[in-house]
Structure formats: C-alpha cells, structure tokens
Length: 235
Image (cartoon, rainbow, N blue to C red; front, side):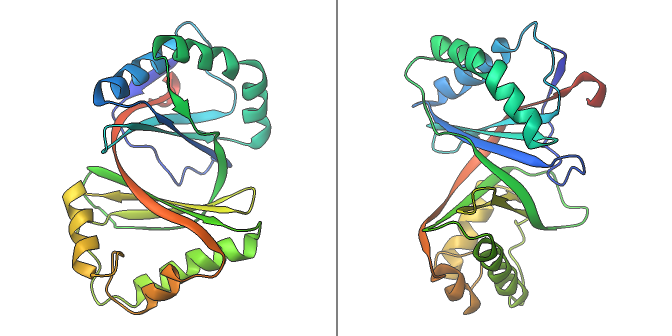
C-alpha cells in the first residue's frame, strides 16, 4: 500500500481527525498477535491508501490475547465509503491468514477532552479505559469525563508515570474511551495499587467517578505498540 510503517505513536489530537474507529480482536497468543499484525499489513499490499484515513495503529494487549486497532479518519463519510467497498475483502484476507479471530464491531468516537504532560518521555504502555452507559446520553458522557478531571484536579500529586489522557465520546452516546499513555505497565500498576481503591488517585472525588449513575460496564486494559501506518507523504 502507499503507506509507511512506523514505530511512532499516533498523534491523538490531530487537527484533521474528525472520527476515530476503535475495535479489538481476540487472537489467543502472543505469536498470533504478531501474525495478525503481519496479516493486516499484507492485506493492504498493492492497495491505494484510503481517502480520508489519517492513520491506523495496532496495539498488542499485555495479556497476550488481544489486538486493538485505533484508526483516525477525517470524517464519517470517508470511513463509510471505505467500509462499504474495501473493508470486507481485507477482513477476509486477515481471517484466512489468522483463522479463528473474534473481533468486536468498531465503535466510532470523537475526541472530547485531553490532558498531557509537556515534554514527557516516549510512552511505554497504552492504557485504554472503557465505560459503557445504560442509555444514549451525550451530556452524561461529558459529565463522566468532567468528573474524572475534577478528581485529577483534587490530587496533590499525580502519578509520575502518567503521560496523557485523551477522552473520547462515542457517536452513539453510550461509551467513553480514555486513551492514556504511560511510561510503563509497572508505573500504571503501581498507581492503581497504591490508591487502594482501584483508581490512579487516592482522593474522595474518585468515588464519584466509580459510582457514576448509569454506568453498566467499566474497566481497562494495557497495551504495547505493534505498528502504525500513515500515508507515505506524512511519514
């Protein structure tokens, strides 16, 4: 494909990214994580870079079982055109190369709010926090994110290993995703364990986040960068 494979983390706050598609594949082993990434790359060989696609990045779950795909698009129309005409054939190529993969349908998001450390080191771990609500409500999505920022503001000192938090709201009004960069798995693990309440901070405001009304599912997973693809002219 007319692209470059890089080991650079994506620019999440890209000014041209109007839509983000996130999906996850259960592959089963570390070896199959890498096989999936290779099948993904080869499925694009000889193909033109899709119009409107800014970048697509694959992350390997630290559990050795999953692969997360994070794709930035200029707009929804560009993705829909790709999904109709090109995506099915590429999915089929991957399923032939790595049979038995179980993938979740992609969820569409838009970036809502962010926080990042200036001049921080290169990330060593991605932590993806997912929240699902019992009904579609854009205001409630935003309120949950704002509650997290209130909790962060109440901390006298934030964990040193935390580098960023990019909060995305799903277009269906039911999900929130926090794309959080950390220096390492261990740094995130220590932050969670030291809080004593399953959050990255110790303050009482985190209880409002954990007990937020309407949340039916929440949790996080840790990932490592597998590969990132961008158009050749942007590499």
